Length: 86
Image (cartoon, rainbow, N blue to C red; front, side, top):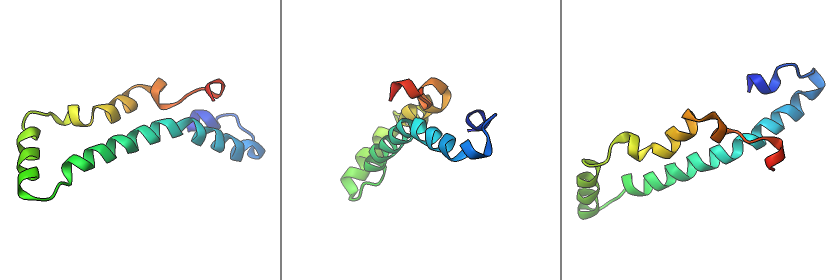
């Protein structure tokens, strides 16, 4: 965001922030979708589904479960897109 606002006049701040939000949207949507999928697994109810989940989680690392979100945060080119891509 700092890079987005660098050199922007006071009159251009609102438009610059809108552009930043538009470019960040794909990353936010991807992170939300990953979180929803993870929640479906982690927020199970019932003894059998919870047992299956608990056993499966012994074989899945945290990095694997959060992989898509971590990838978005580690790779700036996936977090933002250029104005020409929209």
